Image 1: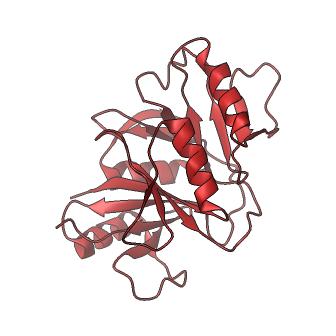
Image 2: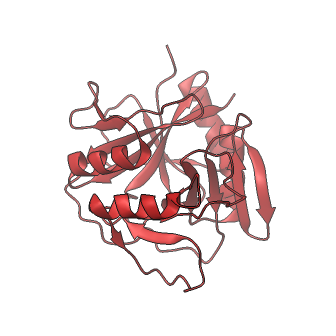
Length: 241
């Protein structure tokens, strides 16, 4: 048994503004969720993707995220067009130590979340869609954990760097290896998994892979909050009907 990646959840101080930004960048529609008050969802346009849920939070952003988007460019001019569109919508340029010779452009969305716009012809993200990679700060062990958790293919494994992808294609998830950034008490970005079978059995399977259950003040809810081997929170949703 395994789980599928159902959604990437982003905490936001101004969720409506952030949802509008990412909907415009990714070409998705914003849907207000009827299940969770205040949650704005950007559904995936195809079966190979995942939804993006943007949830309200009162907590300010205090540190860099452990994950960010690498956006692809479909033509030589598309990178400049995406950067210009993002700046119009409230993004800003960001210096995280990239070199002048680097070909990707680093930006911050209206909430300060980092993302990169890759140039046309990037071979690693070829055919992956608009979100070529969810690029993560993480150890080799966490890459191995998520490969087993999602039953995806390990498409990169060199030194401490790993990357996985569904057998059906779509967005890759990558980890850059140590040294790891400091982790905040709660990540502002996390993933929701939907078990393909029984929720409890899947939680127990994930525990054998190295995950742990955790309490972040969720109270009585239908999902189970866990941490991966690097301490990153994720949620295991209820089983499909």
